[in-house]
Length: 103
Image 1 (cartoon, one colour):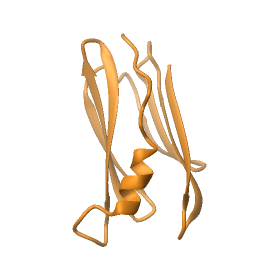
Image 2: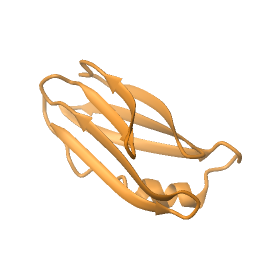
Image 3: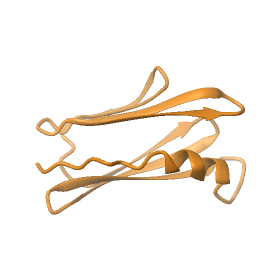
């Protein structure tokens, strides 16, 4: 199972936690923010994209599978602005997914 949890401080919202579980055998995906489950998806064995809100940021998660390895890429945009915010970029920089697994 691939698992990741990132805890960071947002000046307007306080301590925030964003996490992901991706079951290697089952392919089940759970994405959560703080204590709220945002997305549950079953049998994810190929590339897939998810969009969800984290405070005032629209986050897009791309699950990419290449050569039997999964990689997770994030993009974030503030819903009140046209351009990406440096705060969102800093938050997402914590989300370097150091794991990969073969299925």
